[in-house]
Amino acid sequence: MAKYIITGDIHGTLDIEKVVRFFEKQGDEYTEDDYLIICGDVGVCGFNPDIEKETRQILRELPVTVLFIDGNHEHHERLNDYPVDEWMGGKVHFIEPEIIHLMRGQVYDIDGTRFFTFGGAYSVDRYARTEGVDWFPEEIPSREEYEEGLDNLEKCGYRVDYIITHTAPFEVAAALGYGEASLDEVALRRYLQQIADEAEYNLWFFGHFHEDEVIEDVFIAMYDEIVVAN
Image 1 (cartoon, rainbow, N blue to C red):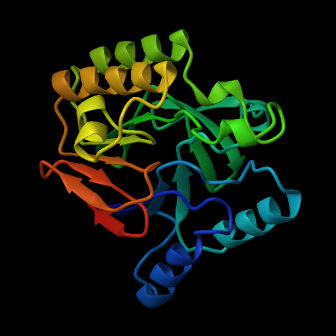
Image 2: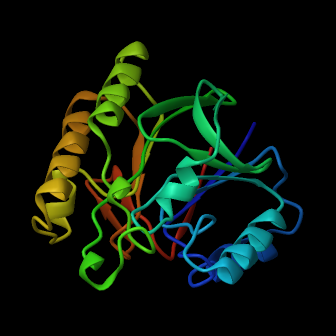
Image 3: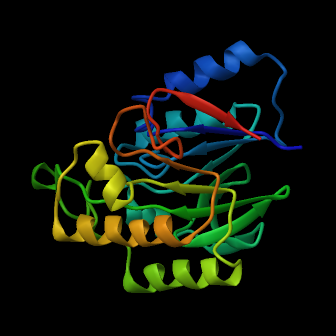
């Protein structure tokens, strides 16, 4: 049975060392039939070609298949230029054969384990960035993506095993001490809160906030820590 290794933002090579160290310690424990899942801000479609190349090389050399959702700090135009394929019941972008972008609002059945994914978030540092260069409006989900997410959850009876997002539901973000960063971010967090209230799931993993915390034993903020789920 597949194992799922879940972690937070890696920001290209900036925070990828935690992943490298984890797998170095594991020896032959994991194979390509297991999955590393990154909760956004990955950088395989990044802002610097050299860093992007190195990031992909490091991920390519891992013993597992790499899955990721998008964060806010991605080159969204290039990411969305990849053809949309179907994999494990949901839409994906194959960045490379074993580096796969899990798209927003999708439900995947991976070796009998069901995941719902929803990337994106608001960049609080966008004032220091340049639109179309290192900041993209597509960091915020579209109405179509919001609707597709609810439609896909309805198809599976709002029951999944794990939810993977970049930002957090409204009440979870508030419990972590984060206020209303922008109207766009509030809308996204409230959308996720609706799902948190209506869906059934075992655990909810998210990144974005650069801290490791557990809220109500269910919502797991990921950054430096790595969690193995079966």
